[in-house]
Length: 125
Image 1 (cartoon, rainbow, N blue to C red):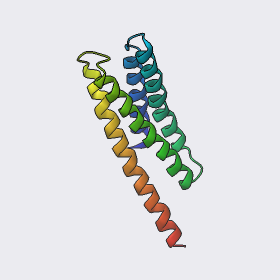
Image 2 (cartoon, helix red, strand yellow):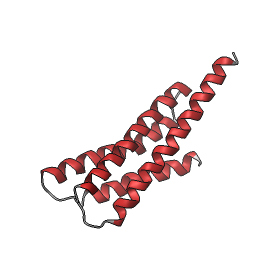
Image 3 (tube, rainbow, N blue to C red):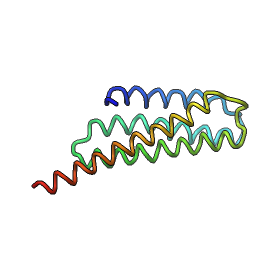
């Protein structure tokens, strides 16, 4: 997948998570989950953009690690909200749970490739 496509995809993920979070009930749990999901999902998109302009391969790998953590955390909050029945039968929540898993997998694979490239670069010098 191309960098541009992932920028669009992570930004859409963030927007969709914000939209669903704003539907959460206005109570202590709903407010907490809303804040956590908005923070983690927007961090996925922001940190991926930062990774794309990293000044070194090491910096790229470090930023990708943050993206992975935030995508997985977003998955946690979405699943937690689902487990708590925060929203009844919400198709978008299921799609976002799947998207968070896919994004996590994509970025784990990208990080692995980048780390292998770093190691081979070091070994070839």
